Length: 158
Image (tube, rainbow, N blue to C red; front, side, top):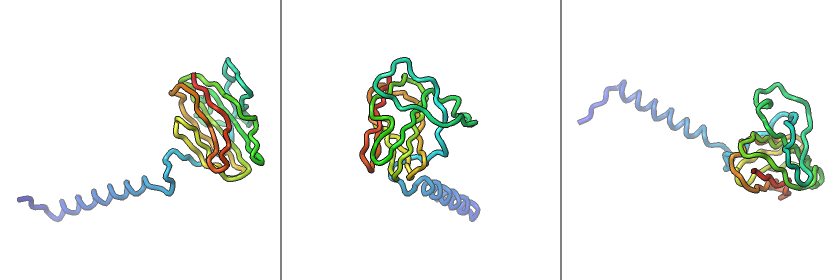
């Protein structure tokens, strides 16, 4: 027969309450846990890849003092205005293992999605949203917006 003292019951209750709080804290309003909040501003680019293909998105902005900026191998910046993608849709090639940051600014609220990596970011109207990831899967991956269903570019990882 198991007999618990009042102190043991209190400890068990506190542990159960803490576990429930942790589980609930992990749940948000988003069904997609990969959706990130938008970043503050785009940052400068690393040198482009050695094998350019079709028109590639270019980087804009000024360097940021953040630690992750120095580590980013490839910055890709896209702007959407009146359902037009700038630079025009094409392919962007990156090397396997590179750290890639995609920053998108849209004139309407939307959501950025990187297929194959299942990454996304909210795109509030007029505010840049970014995803940053290690390109560790080779292949061809579509980068698009969900609401307006625009293909921004195809990411080629070699």
